[in-house]
Amino acid sequence: MEPKKSEVKLKRSMSAGQLEMISLGGAIGVGLFMGSNSTIKWTGPSVVLAYALVGVLLYIIMRALGEMLYINPGTGSFASFATEYVHPMAGYMAEWSNVIEYIIVGMSEVVAATEYLNYWWPNLPDWSAGLVVIFFLTAANLLSAKTYGTLEFYFSMIKVVTIILMIILGLLIIVFGIGHHGIPIGFSNLWSHGGFFPGGFKGFMFSLAIVVGSYQGIELLGISAGEAKEPQKAIVKSIKSVILRILIFYVGAIFVIVTIYPWDKLGSIGSPFVETFAKIGITSAAGIINFVVLTAAMSGANSGIYSSSRMLFKLAHEGDAPKALGKLSKHMVPNRAILAISFGILLGFILNTVLAALNKSTSNLFVIIFSSSVLPGMVPWFVILLAELHFRKNNPEIMKDHPFKLPLYPLSNYIALLSMFIIVVFMFINPDTRVSVSVGAVLLIVLMIVYIMRHGLSKDRKVK
Image (cartoon, rainbow, N blue to C red; front, side, top):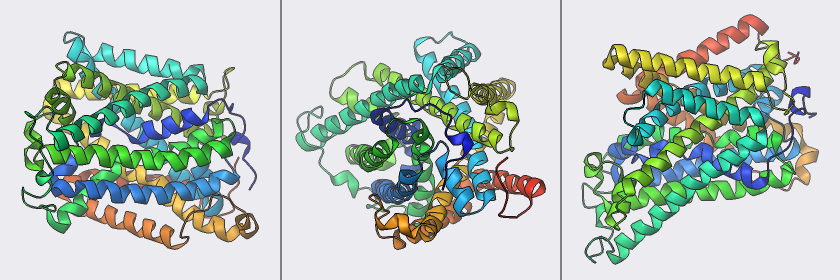
């Protein structure tokens, strides 16, 4: 499979370390720092198992992506693989789903960032704080991919260090009673408040439907690979390490939280991160965690601008977005696509601010819209797995000596596809996610209709 013309123009300026941190940063979001109460309430302490199972699912998806990226590490790769090995409509859906997902995520992260800035500057108007955040991140993305990578590296590093400290301090409280009058808390909170599965099977499945949203963004590796130095080496190193680290960070942090605090009391204690740091005697815990969640929000918006601008750049080269968005700046970045995405985030931020000012109840509309990004966010995962099945069949010679194959193929692939399908079904069953997943489904149906009207259903469509 030859790289497409639109995939070889972007400058390879990011290191393996930056690529690794981008993958971590994309998948570790604000939700974890705010206590993950939305997942814990459904299933109690067994939420640890939910994060672990979805982590294994993501391992399969990322290994499938890595298998294909190793042969062709281009920008927007998972969409290219979908076009080549599934159907041009699958690639189109993956690209536009990514753009929609990250514009919505970018809006919500900017809104979150303004709230965190109010912690230090309570008199700062939300609209001005939002403008500053959007301008800063847009400027960083316009400079170069290396500037974006450097910024995301440090954003992610702050999140990672905080989680590691949280896990270490939490274990000291659990095992040695430090910060708890020398009395070890122990592990009884895992089963003494209604058992390990207080929400039963249905509650556990509901939590899985929400947990997947926490991990979305890990496929950023497939987009940033096109701008990495020594891409094959970077891809192997990043995928091998990033999955293990995400499992440690998510599962480790959630394990510490539900072990220290009774799961049914978490909703009333505020952020478990703040409380854990405060227990050890760090009196400025609230300020520290506020800084960390601010960087987490900035990181989410930063990744959103980067990711979706590359997809918009690719769509422009394929004739499915205005041609002007396919231009590169002198810094070899898709500057017009970056500005278009930033403008979309700005419009969403303004809309949210206006709605919140007019009527606070209408701000629930934005929550529904944000949640609607979860289903489009799963589209890249589905197309990666489907593409890998066809990739294997179409490239038997390449696979003979391939050094980075998906383990247990094809069984692992089929298990991952079935698992995601079941999770989506439970998203429709759960009354708390039914509306948002329905909005996401409508968005995908609209994309399909637009594609069919423009291109029909022929598999022979050529990139323009």
